[in-house]
Length: 127
Figure 1: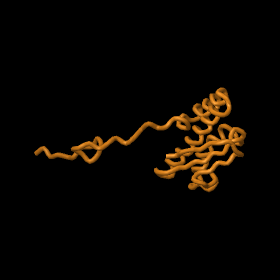
Figure 2: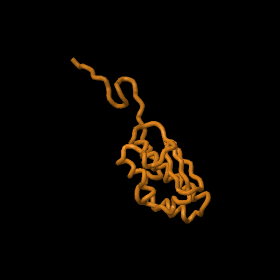
Figure 3: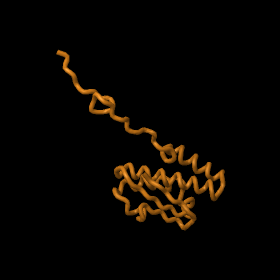
Figure 4: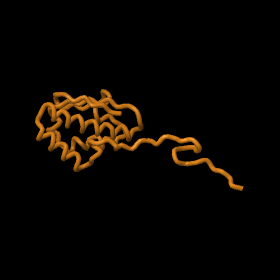
């Protein structure tokens, strides 16, 4: 889960109090920087974004962070700038990757009785 706080500032981006450059593993930093690279630095220069992330593994956290960044910037533009620029941001992000704004709805199916999992059943002998 990632929660982003977006306010007027000078372009700071921090995840759990640490700057983006310190996020491990190094390769996944590019995934976090996708919204920044797509929209350009000038869109982020006037805002400070603080992100609090917890739960899941490294990759899941990275995807949650990039979604939180995108959503918070779109919400900031809707509230403090104008509707036209918000629409423009939203279009850029959705044409590149829809998961930047829309969460993946798939969840774990619950286990049922009569088997070890959701769909698998216990074996039975028939002789």
